Image 1 (cartoon, helix red, strand yellow):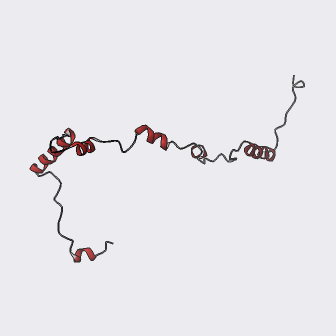
Image 2 (image 1 turned 30 degrees about the horizontal axis):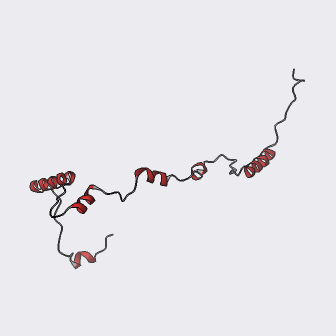
Image 3 (image 1 turned 90 degrees about the vertical axis):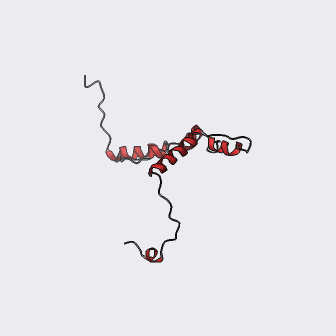
Length: 118
């Protein structure tokens, strides 16, 4: 049975390397004989940033606060319930002494401002 099938020898490593070089140049691929991870698969993909940006829509879409500012007049008052709730929460925290600290209105002294931190 072995006499019927032809016996093939494996080609030399240098021959295989030359074939790989030619194949990479023909198909416009990068030659990586050491099989090192290069990230070329990710770097050659098209960028999807614009697709993601289009999914979330335009950033200049009118918000509730912008509409309230635009529509509010002396005769017509627009109420934003989320903003009213936020302001109520801030006021209740201030009454309990849990609010944000007051801002310092005086300029820093020259003595403290002249020193450099180590």
